[in-house]
Amino acid sequence: MRDNNRKGIKEFHKTLNQRYRRLYGGKDCQEQAEKDKNGFLMKCALAAGTLLVMISISLLADAGGCDGLNIDGNGEITQITRPSQEQGAFSFQTEVEVGTKDGILTKEYYITIQPKGSSQQEQEQIFPEEREEDAIETQLRGLISKMNADTSAERISLPNELGKGQTLTWKKAEESNLVLYGAAALAAGMLLYKTRFYRVERAERQARESIIQELPEFINKIVLLLNAGSVLNTAFMKIMEDHQKSGRKQSYFYDQMEQISRSVQEANGSLHEELRTFAKRSGVKELMRITNMISDNISKGADLSNKLKKENEMLWFSRKQNAEEKGRLAETKMTMPLVILLLVLILITIAPAMMKL
Image 1 (cartoon, rainbow, N blue to C red):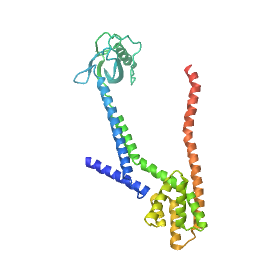
Image 2: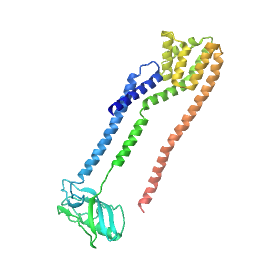
Image 3: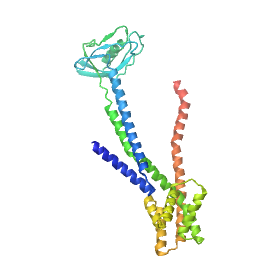
Image 4: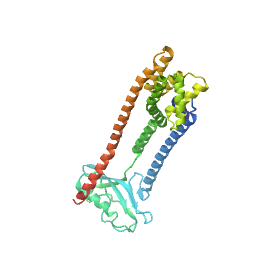
């Protein structure tokens, strides 16, 4: 089991590293992948610890509720010891089996035992879960109410029969929360599994948005410089030089362009090959189409300026559509807060009228 866990963690770390390397190219991503892995393991440990604490508190609460109950070997409650003032009241859920001529009738009650010497309560907290045969129900209510009628008595003896001879068996009802905790553990596990690549997925989403946002302007500059008589490499280097001097906030797109620029200058790499590699890594179709045009220009001598100009018009149109889509999405996100605000206003308006009824 431990070997399988270690293997799973290694595979998770390997996948993280691969996705970061695909995102940032030759940049060392071991540190970021290690950070994401440790963050995910920390979330898993926190979720497991929280669940264990909840289970422990529940078990302690259940155990604490049984301190004043005397239970025999058959699981029947024979007597109740009234708590002291320091201990305070305690509650438990009981299951009463009433033996009648027609068979056994089972009822459940939530009983609160007041501490010794406390004042008599006018109304006890008794919550029957089932209502059958009103006569038996009324008698059982009366018996339970008498448990706190005289709080001077240290012990409470539970009756074995009702007035008409029906036998009574008092048992502590089992309150198991295993199903609830199991569902919580399953939900937490599914949530953690679904969000295990949250950071890298967010970085990929931001990278794609950066490319789509910056690419039209970048291609527009390329077209202007090509029409002015510059070759592609010179135009590319001129744009990167101007960007560095502008002092603009660095984005993912221009960070990758600078990485390509250093590779071309320092390692004597091929510009169109570097651009094609970046386009494949990013997976952005618009960028892949442009790099294919540049490759055709290198191999076939196609008119690059006019092709890039036509493609750039499509890019600007696509950018406009993305902006409109984000605007509609923002309007949709505002709908729910407005609905909640409207409901609050309605409640504030009708609450005084309802309280008078």
